[in-house]
Amino acid sequence: MLVDHWPLLALRVRSARLELRLPTEAELAEVADVAARGIHGPGARPFLTPWTELPPAGRARHVVQLHWSRLGQWTPQNWVLSLVAFHEGRPIGVQEVRATDFGVRREIVSGSWIGLDDQGKGLGTEMRTAMLHLAFAELGTESATSLSFADNASSVTVSRRLGYRPDGINRDVREGEVVESFRFRLSREDWAARDRPPVEVTGLKGSEELFGIEAFGGS
Image (cartoon, rainbow, N blue to C red):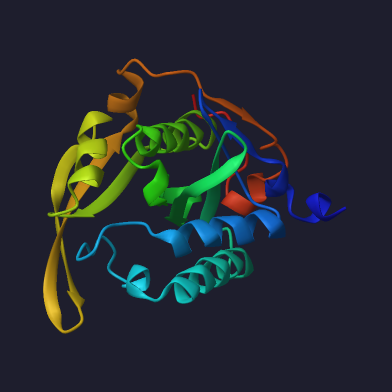
């Protein structure tokens, strides 16, 4: 079976309202349709790569190709785990966790998006909370970082609500202009000190080598 060769297919991260996991091909098409229907209002530019400004078909194709490329380029030294978030059995967006030399640095960077139809319900916060449990309690992460443009109020709010601390700025070039992002960092100590809703993780065993670590159980 394919899961024998790629054990992450068995991973399930469950919170009160959500399940995060890798999608089937049919579900990948569904989450691409979510992106095609829209991720933000006119004029907003929440990502450095302007893929959300593509026409609907282009947004959908980007989601599919990016998902495949994340899996195809995965190495223990440089990986991106793109989990689709399911609410009431249907995909609503994507929660990413990525790391470089994780076995040594024990640091992750997160990113996410959620379809317009499901925004404003607290699901983005719940997605990030579930991801942080996976990172700290299961993978043994020491710190988690997140980047947000100054005008991306929803992302900044989620970071602050979950206990991230300001960690400076990043300066990048977008379409010939310099743009600044706020960088936030959440340490293991700050994560552990907060009350957290329950999150269940199953199906992780057997994937240690993929993450570049010897064993799970970071809590």
